[in-house]
Length: 426
Image (cartoon, rainbow, N blue to C red):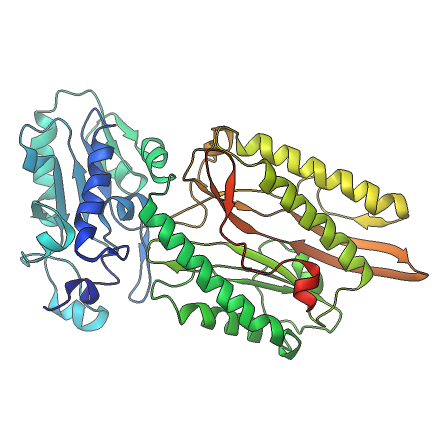
């Protein structure tokens, strides 16, 4: 096997580190072990079929393994060093590999060096091993992730959710993942800049969506961060619009929400562009309000503040500008929300919405190395007379960048993805 990382590229994510990848993941596990006071069990995979896997992000973060049928045990109380990290893997199944491709499995011992585990045991021995281990466990509880927690409760144990401990570690990106995040941004930027001059060519949402996604997939083997949103005209007022089968009219604004995954890290970008290549006066006015809100939010972001307090300031800024620059001029609007249509920021990392399950992170201070979205939006029916012409239409606008939190502020990783009115029209 001349290049095992290439052969296992979809089942072991090396983060582009090659032979250094096993040490990279081992350091993560060691840091995690130091936060534990008892046995911890992680099971792999949230869902899988023959063509697509949705790996549990906690398991992926600690192992780099992107396949089903595996269990990771971290045991800070183990007497022997070799038993502090144990990986359970399935047996090799050549028939399944004929259908689905190569997988990590036993008795293939060459994979020890590839994935950086000293102790790898057959998954069929886990139940017996676990019963023996908990029989001698002095701690009053154990930890596990959601995938396996219910199964372990069968043993009448006090099973604590490890997610909060894990998330504290995972949401701060190391230099290696920051480099991957920059590459994901480059891919999204290149795709957007290629479709922008051709925007008048796309006659419906499906064609535009297909080309945008194809341009990203040509540059990454780990796929999209999420199914793209391509919403023209009134459709952009549906936040998670998914139909993507409507025609694009010349006067429409088109909302694009897209992103790719590069190795282990995602990006999340939104842009709103005129199908004709030119904003009409009403569109330009409202777009300017959203863009100014985004710049206001970016200026305020820094370590030590919470997303909850930052979001409150940003939405207040948008509403104030909407009153001063639209309604005071006689503008009328109908919206299906009051003040805040959605969060202005979420965490980004190994999954596009990190920590989305409980959103406790919104109340916790930002730390350097966190990657967050910046995505103010405005959605509804708007009407205003400008220059003697009455403009009346459904408009959905969202502009989203990804910000890397620093000690004194933030770095906008999406700065090369055009969003100024003049630049888009040009």
